[in-house]
Length: 327
Figure 1 (cartoon, rainbow, N blue to C red):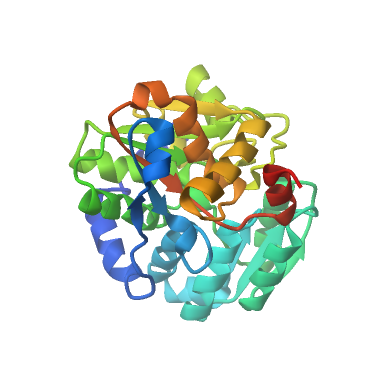
Figure 2: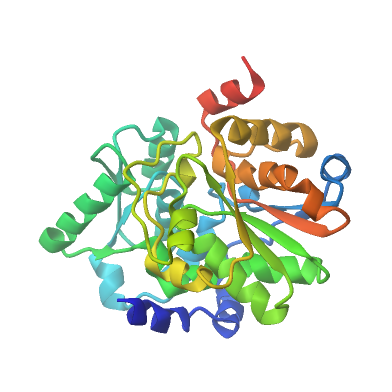
């Protein structure tokens, strides 16, 4: 299996990312890269935020979805697609499915954010609620594929999804060619892996630092052990990072190339939401705010550098906002 994903990793490359950009820009505008003076003061560096939360579905995932649909065959388009999600991936696939006229079925766990569920349905997707967590939803998808003939999209293991996601790296390099460090959340690993592939192809010296919750350190544990580890559970306020296991393709890309991984407590994650609100005037979801808090946690080693933090999404649960601001 390792060899299979090593071969797939070669399909995630700068040339294909440049091609993906021409596809994605038919539907999306570039997202802003903004240097914030207050954040720079707090961190002691030149602090830039890449605003993937400003995309139409509120996260970076829409980049991968659009590029994926563009590369589907006519037969796959007609069969329809099936995805398991906690939120952003399902939102992205449902939104893109409208543009490509592809039937989309989205499976979510029972405790999923009801606001996210409503929006997925508003994009015309069929919503199925099943299981206690993402991995129960994922297992149910595998059952449905056998019985219904859908194309099951395993988001982290699809090279064209990663090539689409990697376009955010192109934009960073165009806007800030002298970037020293990029800090990116890690859930299933697709975003960070795609970013690393693109940025390092242009400038191998850029540090890529991942961020995970202490309660869901699936990539960190796999990275330290040298093989993919599946956690017993992954309960965290950062739903988008609640991964019991990293996807195989991102793991193969990241395992020998990522610079470091920062782990955050639940309180630190909530503090990151508050920091995003006060220092950038943006509402970031918990997973989208972790890069800011990780930068604060390691601010001594970032001193004087040009640092980009990926605000990966803005689909914040209202309960998490209340917890973050203390009301």
